[in-house]
Image 1 (tube, rainbow, N blue to C red):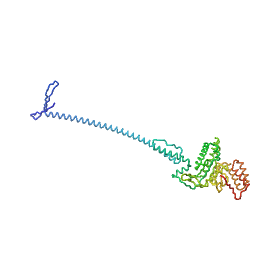
Image 2: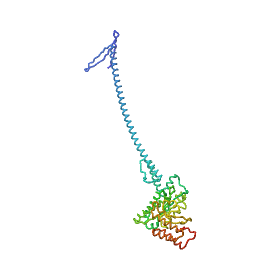
Image 3: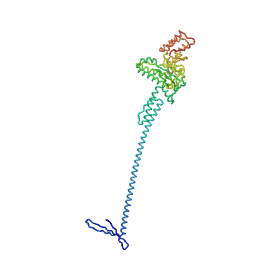
Image 4: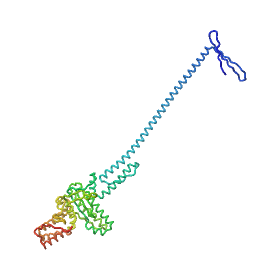
Length: 443
């Protein structure tokens, strides 16, 4: 239904608004509704309606603004809470990450420290208490560790073929070994087992190797403890030396002290082995000192640390002469004059060794002077007097003195040697050039 507005002019210049509207009630009765209103009144009503509407809109706007402010506050608070949660979460993540990195770094550095420590010990040829690298979570470290373990095993095996002191020298030089020797004063020792061939024939191979290994282990340890070098094993024999390749203070005293200690060790082993039904093992030792050439000897493809010189051969001859005089340790004249004040020695003879042209006095090494008994001092003095009488060509008097000496020390084999010589000299006196020197004809 349309609404029509009609303006009716008024005489007093006022205008009236008239509206005519058709209307039908519920009974179907049709009517026309006419509304008459002055224009000013209408405007006033309309303005009031507009003002009310504006006021309502303003109120709604204010309410909406307040709601927006509250929403903004809530959003900010929520954002702040979320930010704080995010910060806490980030801090937690960072903390966990830092802890993980610390653990990872500690594990890594611990593995590297262990490996570095092992490398340092191996560089010094210290293989004691070293274990193979365990498998780890870091493959690279594990591979490095395994490679190092393989190198360690190989180097440890290599060190068993080469004297420990020589290996240390090679490692310290940090360069490829080359052939070459240099002069050096060295104390040299040869030793072997008396009657080893007979012993070898009476034992099964496994038992023989076991006995020999224990013997050589014990003597090698003794030599190394006194800063000596085990140069090589020659069957049951050993070549050892002091002051090569590294310098050793008082190397002559160290060599002699080691020889006495070795004989004590052998006596202990012998007692136990006899109780186990094994043969009696005795050793002979020869020691000399002098200038030799020491260094790398051999070919360019295979070399060893060795010694060259007359003193080396003399030490070997002295070891062999122990059998002839029935003694355990013989030292050269040059060694005797270096150690006489510290060690008690018995003058045995003056000989020209096989293959030599120069005579040398030889002495039996008996004990440290501060540990020797009065009987040992008398033993040396009495025998020394016999040797002097023998050299003075008084062979009959020497025989009588030998008989007295033998009554007191019946087991001394040197007595039999001099008795035979005196008897020979009495039957066939030597010429005027004879000076008491005995020329050996066999090693």
